[in-house]
Length: 608
Image (cartoon, rainbow, N blue to C red; front, side, top):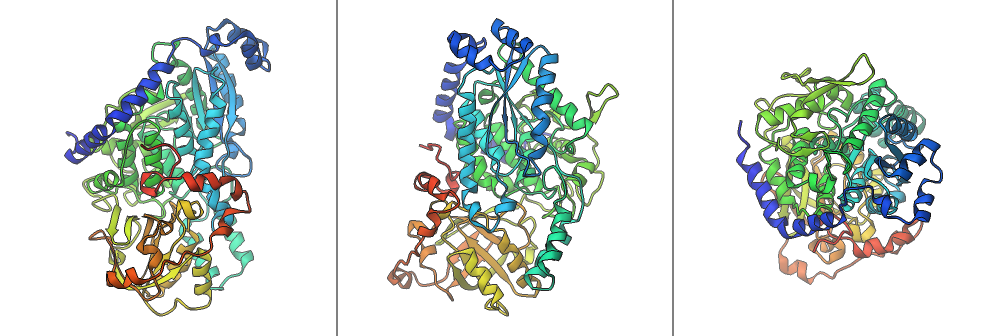
């Protein structure tokens, strides 16, 4: 089947819009490319420093300048389940590189924080900024200029986008992203959410809730719901930055280790020393990002990527807008049901056909660019597979099935769960916002009700506990949560409180200039409102009782109050000084000053 016209047209618009920036970016790559090991240009003392700790074989090889040296950028720490498996990856990579005649060195570590740990607390205000820090830390590690390709070990929310931004800054180097895989399935996600709501209503105690949460988050690997972390893995495969089939293999399994060894061998094969030189900056183009957006919509992925994709693309000289994402969403059907868009987790998704089925289905429907360059070679066809472990311990791949293994989890484009991907733009006098409706029941997509206005998530939680939100329909507005105000934290905890009210029969919605977790779902939420309240918008002049129209069907976000009355209201900005100190926030003042708007990627990367 030929490509869907809308997909082609959006790709062409992105290409035309990006032309000048992209040409400038590619010129920088061309300048950096030299077809021999860069370390040969270092002085002898410089080079000696770089190989001093190597073993005899590696040291001899690097002295001769005839082998490829792989850099490893790792997000390992042993506190976070998703990144704990990376502890042993460098040893596996070094051994595989040595067997293949190359060398591998850990170039640097990057920070990896967990939004699940910081959710609802001060640390979350550093979460979005950590993406830029990760990109910068990547640059520091690669600045030694001694590597021929790079393996990136990262999984979760801001880590993968930050690594991609850093990798694209060193666009002349080939790059392969190596995932750790999801933890095994345990307590169903809907049971966990039910327990949270019972706790919010004081129907179970903290000890009982902790036991239930610990059954859900129980071992090493990525959390099994389909939030930002697992959306990251989907996108890396859609963009051809993973090896085919690598995304959702559990950690500490023979197949997972075989994929890591294979990634090492492949990285050595695509350096400038060989015949398949594949620098990431030239490999990734606007088609790659369009494929990521298609995958995001087809699988009901995280809304955080309406920010991250823009920032990542910008690092490659590619200009993506919210309208591009929404336009693609309008023609891409939802073909996966993974929590919070369904009851299945990512292990069930993988067992039902996973990424191989998704990619095959999207290719057959003409919804993706199947001619992109990937780390595996030319074309996305190689990713329409299912990975298996061969008898010799290596990876073998079978063509993905053309039928779903479980039609309640995966379907085809002719019988989708929803006709569009569910990511939409809301616009009106309150600004522009993103909403994802794939997990929201259609009867909840619109509401016209009075506002209840809060300047923090703590204020809303207190109002809930005091019973002030009971018995009436309303639109909650939580403002001063934008990137300039406090770093744009996720407000996922509010889903529990609003979900309780919704289950009681109230009609509720949320408007915020902050973010929501990729796991948020059943409550209609207008997020990333731009401009943010701190930028002197109507959002800052809202008062309790103001009538608001919130309509995801028509794309409307409108304050239904006479504009003259609004103009007469004084602008009352609360004291935000408490956002600027404690828990390391003092160190991030420059980020709050320099950060761009949400629809521009909420980044410090120069956009003009």
